[in-house]
Length: 330
Image (cartoon, rainbow, N blue to C red):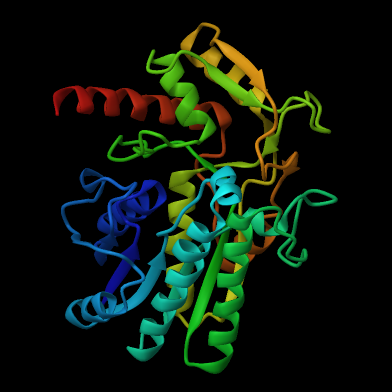
């Protein structure tokens, strides 16, 4: 049997692909390469360049590769952009997901793992947030993910189909073996930008908002190492294959760090100060959100291996150095 990984050439998807390769699992990637990079995919996997919303394409991939499970990463993820261009997000994240789910049902694919987000909770009144907190998305990105989770719930009720929706908190870091990492040139991840500044690829780092109701005024997030997140997907796959029922689970460490704390950690790693400017809040951003991860630990037996902010920062920096070297050779 084969795992279909949509968006497998992207940041998180490529980390799962390397884990699948390490586990000896057969997999196939569908990615339009709008933000993903072909070099990020392990040689053991096949790449089909195309749109995950293309029903005919996905149906052929499922049949040709004997797919029994889908892990769905493909989509758009920039919160401020979702505010300025909501229709793009409802197409890429909701409409395309609807098409993919339909193809799975029609072709007997019973296991589906969905790349959801903590943004579905909006700005919680208290932290940490548990999975039973109500949906209250603060931006179209979050709403697009809520809509997909609602579709999955309805489809699982109506058909022989089960899913795990993994609600990511702030994903950071890179593969410790430097095989893949965040490779999108214009990515908006804090650590990506900070590392580009550290390596002289950008002039300065901008903090968006320093007037939040947090200890130092900057946004607080629960940062999870991308390799631990890949392991969560692997655990979810085993859960579904062993008969697990449909469920949504938080993916975070249960503690938060502010934007300034992340910057200070990187400064400790590189031994110097970074040029930093402050600006206004970005549309759609919130002050603080932290995961309650009790459920994923108890249900999937998931135990983080890289729960250390300095280690996360160092792995991201090492990848950025390797990527710069690779780009200079291309």
